[in-house]
Length: 374
Image (cartoon, rainbow, N blue to C red):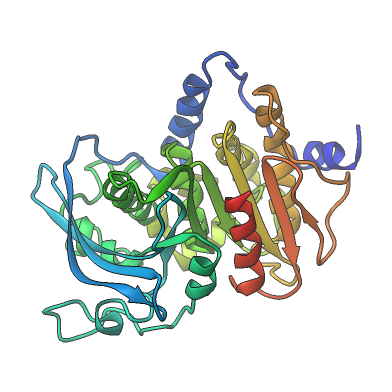
């Protein structure tokens, strides 16, 4: 055994379930079911119709050559229609282009009068709070679609009246009912339902991406929705890309008692504390392994000990065997923890350890653009 295997064994990280290489979908659904039951919860099961209405559009944005669209998405549900917005920048091209679908903490700059929904006198989010290299993304021939998480449901414990919660709150038992991460991931897939109907986008290069709690969201969305060929997690940490056992910084107990218990199903609270965490019948490499057969990128930051880059790196190592079993290169990286500035881009699991703190900046985006275009 090498360093990484010794570290995984020292932490007591469980083995992945036996893989069905001939029918990986069976294995993927098993992983999704485990994670639904224990972390993210089960959402209601229903078929919905999705339609979009372009409320603002320009085909000469950024000095020409780029189309921008602000689109109202309407989703039918058994409890009435649900509406939210998706904002698109895409290069004007005769050929389909790669697409990033970003779950974001704010409306994008310029979106709906800088964060103000039409007919709503109060912006739901400060405009441009989370700046994006949107011009650089389209200059590289990629489209960017953005949804705002609080447009779906607030980052709070309101499961009765806040956005999607007004349609689907917790179920009566509550124990395995979906949390807000499940809500946000569901909306990202509904946005893709609409975008997928257009020939503007290269169906072989569609990425879901998010940072921090929305990095957790991007992973959960990608695990469930295989139309996302590329899944990108930036500094997602605990309950995202990072191995939970032996983790430093953000832990289950902290999230579920002080920060955001509403992100998860109530059963997850049972794993608070080191002894309880050690009894989990899974760890976060189960989530990463659900992306086997596709492409996965984990972005970490060297000073982000809250997210714990070493534990994110370990998780990529532990998920690698599923990718390899499907005939892919998995995580090709040294048998040690990474150093600041190192990047590992050879396999279908890619990784970088950016120098610096908890953020998603131009350094990260440049790597994600290269990843999606490759």
